[in-house]
Amino acid sequence: MTAMIDTILNSTNAALIIFAASTAIASAFVRSPLKRVAVGAIVVLVAMGIPVSVRSLFGWTVSAVERPSLPGFFLLVALAVSAAMGWQIARFAEFRFATLVLAVTGFVLYPGAAGFLNYDTYVIGYSGYLLPAAIAVVIAYALWRGYLLTALALNTAVAAFLLGAGESRNLWDYVIDPIAWIIGLGASIAIATGMVIGKFRTGEIAASSQPSAGIGETPISH
Image 1: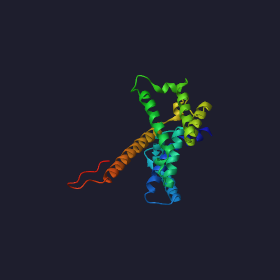
Image 2 (image 1 turned 180 degrees about the horizontal axis):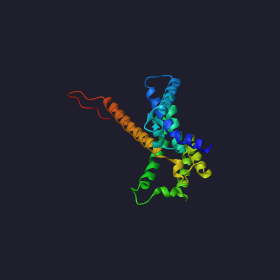
Image 3 (image 1 turned 135 degrees about the vertical axis):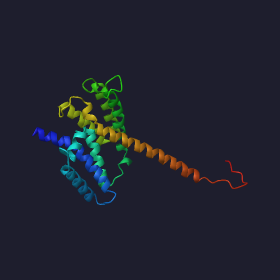
Image 4 (image 1 turned 90 degrees about the vertical axis):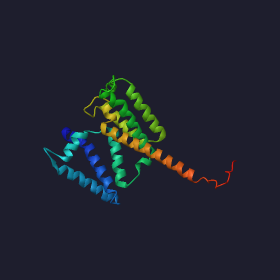
């Protein structure tokens, strides 16, 4: 029973990534949310049946992305649902906040854990109050802003760590994973780029709408 649960949990990241990607592509051709969901489910099943060497395509994807963190799982579910429903998820303030938190958290964790810094930040996930305090601050801010899904994801991650629900005994593994960081970083960059382009276009429109003085005329000053 435990082995089956582990297999399901380990497959979650791969299934959600394939489903969300295929559903997003299908949204360009299919308007019905139900049909998009059907396309996503069929693609996941097809990936399970395509052999690539000794594994299926789905099996290779599972080994590549591994088990998601709880916030990573919530993020992938949100992306899958938005792709199926055709929502512009980047317009939601909570999505922008959550992806920014994941992007910043990844920069705190992975450079040190990969050896690019003199201090390995991964070790603070085993004990101490620094990481729990930081998570508590993020949860408190999320609750204050009404970002209930973000607060739920982090609280669930902390609860899973305290209950020993996963194999790891490091709190970092429950609050972030590489896939969540990549998605959060990519989404944050895309959102920031869109905001800059939007402000630039707004400035261009405002400038073009200003009346210009004719030839030989003196602009009126107020």
